[in-house]
Image (tube, rainbow, N blue to C red):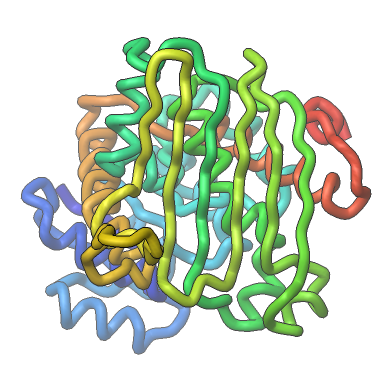
Length: 334
């Protein structure tokens, strides 16, 4: 099949590399506002260059991958749907939930599949955790712990446009908690602080946060996030039930150092970047998109799915600012 790529920054170029190695993909058509980025990708992956999103859609593509700036996501998603072309879009659907809801309303009832990029759904560990929970191996759940710790904060310009740590970082934890447990979040309480880069505080954001999520069956989920984890990129999940407990990310490249006498675990080189930690998951995610394009599977992460994680992020942001518990229905109705 022939796949278009809109946006060739860090993640777009990474997707181009991944797609070029998939058996199902015969050719790529790439476009970026910066002509040099498109030209470099075309040379590297033997791709065709188009000078606009419209040109990509007119180039006979079977599907489109959107890795452009967040502000462009709504318009590009709708352009693909109007053209009848299946679309994969990196999260978020839009900068604000109001814009995201507009996108959802615009695509409801259309038969063009849309897949939103939440790569943890394709990580082997998280897939196994979901199967264990859904298969009843853990019994009734009582506690979930989800962690995302970045090795260093992104640049100031990125922070200013990110929508805040809950929408930019924690949202991956929120999505994977819903996906693994099969439960919905009803209420949150969030705290945060600034112990590192001044520009994060100046942007009105926190660099380290914690959130308590109450799920609709009474399970408690604890989410921990930080922009500062000097040892590496740390993504983990613990799931505790009345029958058994399991963990995702408890492997030799875990960026933690044990101080227990005689313990050598973890012994590997710590993960230092999200692309390192989730290389296989990204490949599985884009492989799934080719199957969506081929019509052999439904979208594994819809616009509606992505908005649910966004509501949790909005609730946590409000909770942090107002120092109180916030229900999901409160922000959904706002």
